[in-house]
Image (cartoon, rainbow, N blue to C red; front, side, top):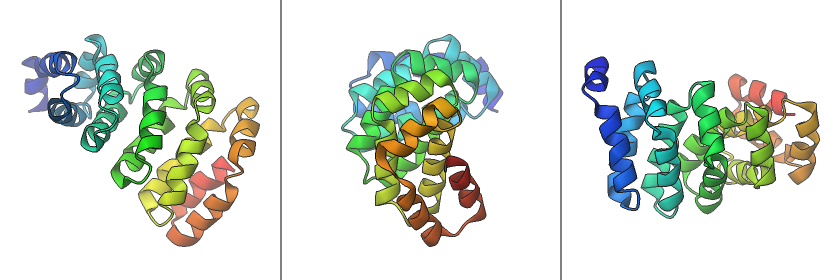
Length: 207
């Protein structure tokens, strides 16, 4: 079924919609939602990357930064479309990290945005370029704020610590992550409240 939708040109049409109506938050919300579902499949991801869908999604996130629904769906769609390294590098190159960090800072109280935003950031932080950009534009502080606000939410805590873990992979970046905000007390609080093995593993890696 998904392959038929992709073959019919749905991905290209959705990307065109994002380009033409990128300041219309309702249109962006719906187009991002559709791309999020399609982006779970490799053929759709490849199409989206080939037709500049990553840039269109980043622009949607940037231009609709005040709209919670549009930000949530844009983070969701970007998380699926940037599953592979090519998509991640394209998102980083066109300002995806800065747009995402700005979104997390604005909507730190929104559970869904922190959830999908930290998940997306954990992907973009896999490369050195993504790590440098994230640390440089306040991404560590944004993730820490998400953890602080949502200490009792297992998914946000897990994905937030996963993002910090990926940011800390390289020794050269680790001190910047740990020293920047001395966030380990929030990790301990999250462990105490969530008590999940998967989260504990992500947190230990981050430490």
